[in-house]
Amino acid sequence: GAVVSQHPSWVICKSGTSVKIECRSLDFQATTMFWYRQFPKQSLMLMATSNEGSKATYEQGVEKDKFLINHASLTLSTLTVTSAHPEDSSFYICSATGTSDTQYFGPGTRLTVL
Amino acid sequence: RKEVEQDPGPFNVPEGATVAFNCTYSNSASQSFFWYRQDCRKEPKLLMSVYSSGNEDGRFTAQLNRASQYISLLIRDSKLSDSATYLCVVNESGGQNFVFGPGTRLSVLP
Image (tube, rainbow over all chains, first blue to last red; front, side, top):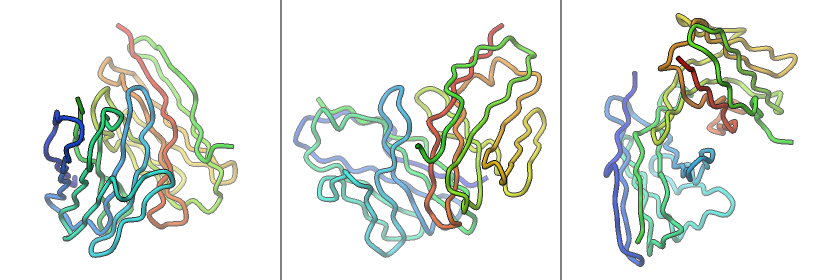
């Protein structure tokens, strides 16, 4: 099956710093990538959808200036959490679709902001 | 009304039991359907895609009823390793609009 990787798998940072998370499709070209956030014991929440070479579409309530998404190639999308605060601590998961409409998920990044 | 609804759970069943989950969706134009399982603190993993009336893979059977707008997942001879949260995902309109259900938690007990 299709493989999606994420890096880093976990990160701890101080409040006010920025954190970049990478999402890569390893064996297929990802025309669309999705970024989700999941708080403990809650459902996945879609943050944004990005297509290669175009601006990301953010869900209502997600600040695009705080969560910067770049999808510069068909195999790489990045999410940068700018000026992170403790309330941004969460499990961030990306997913990708290629020629089919099946989503394949990365292993997730656990962010802890002190 | 939520777009995708699932059995609230949790389901606690003994090993070897057969368990069925239901998922209903509100958008009749929905094109494709998926079941994922998610273990605690892990990412969702694809269990099954459902495009036509149903799909079977070993102990797992998914059925789709477009008229009634529901998808079911049947697990036979459940194993301890089946313990997870099962997510129903609906792709609306064949585009990139995926809607997740809230998930149903399954615990298989020895």
